[in-house]
Length: 289
Ligand SMILES: [Zn+2]
Image (cartoon, rainbow, N blue to C red; front, top):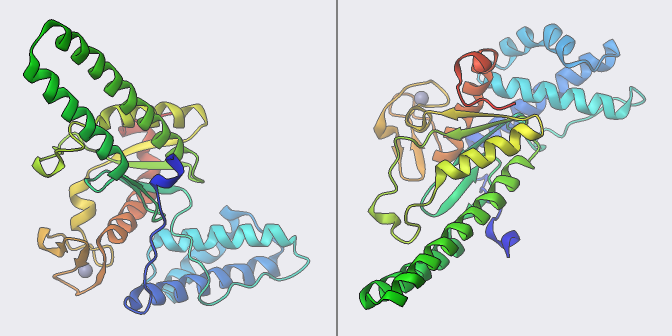
């Protein structure tokens, strides 16, 4: 049952040229690094970065720095795989590695968790079960007898265990993904709101602590990200305004850049996590591991 609770989102590329442009630049940058690495007989990421990063930033200035880095990582992996027996080739419109080390996880009303790799943990099935608990609870509450009270108590215990089981499953799903760094939205300021009646008081704090200890156990890190800025800021020019975001669409009021709102946020996260990485162990209280 749990396997059916997430799905892959398909993005129509013909409607967002931005993505095609990014894919072209990214694959070209990746190919350039591979050309260099093949000639230099080197797949070491640090050395590849030293040798190519500045030139490639100049050559592809519109490609975000986080993507330059994932292009280099991809190049390194492909060079390593072919062991310099053959020069690796990257298709100009091949798959883009958005960020191998950074995964952003949103929590929302329609999805309990959304990952930046476009997979979702949908809340529908959970809502249905929570709704059933709610119904039983209200029935027992209206009875008011002693046995109803006892049943009510049992019911809330069962509901708590159900919620914890789901959180464990979601946490396993999150930490098993191929990322070293997991960026969770900091939800301490977010209230579920009226729209979220069925999901009720979902314990995101519990989910977060489970993700943290599971991640720590396998040497991964978890950081909390302030959600306001990641959803408001333009991932292209950095301009911040609440009005930039309109539902699922992000359109920058300053530079006109238009993109899926979640994808914009996850690009911001990727960039943020990258640039902040060296400081993480010092100023992030919830870093695990
Ligand atoms: Zn902009």
